[in-house]
Length: 230
Image (cartoon, rainbow, N blue to C red; front, side):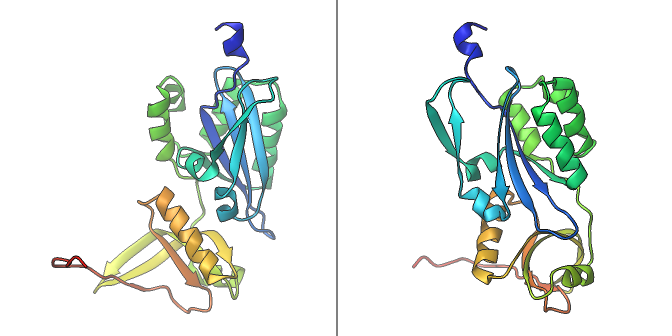
């Protein structure tokens, strides 16, 4: 690697960290890591995921340079590793970010906070495209909750939820266990959040409900036939 290459910043690992406490909403931060050169960048301060997706991420092309380029956060989110952390885990991530760069410590941290079936030792030897494919398959570890618990934690709110455990019977989808991704006071913002999340993760079973509902049974609809062009 020559001097010019050493001065470049080329992030190849992106991390979206969502910190959540018992009394506060999500707090989002974005981390960019140049694994080869050990360079790191971070941005933080969002309390709503849809606000984060509207952000354009400025990137320095050189370590000590002034020239910047930018990328939309919505595009970065498609390849980012998503970590849902409590306050202690988030503090551990912050300390890791400001310490001298260590591939070993970063690998240990990411391995501890993602699903165990991913072989991270092998993952870092893959091409960037292969890494991003594996990275996209990883979901953060979440604690499933019942609808009754969600209504108590988020009274009078619209909630964007992911179904963790569900079953179908007589064209009714019954959601048993869920995780709350975000809560809202505005239904339009809730649906905007749903559309953005569905665009990024089309295979995940997502719903928007108001917590005034007593149950969350969903009628399954199936289309059969030919649509006529208009």
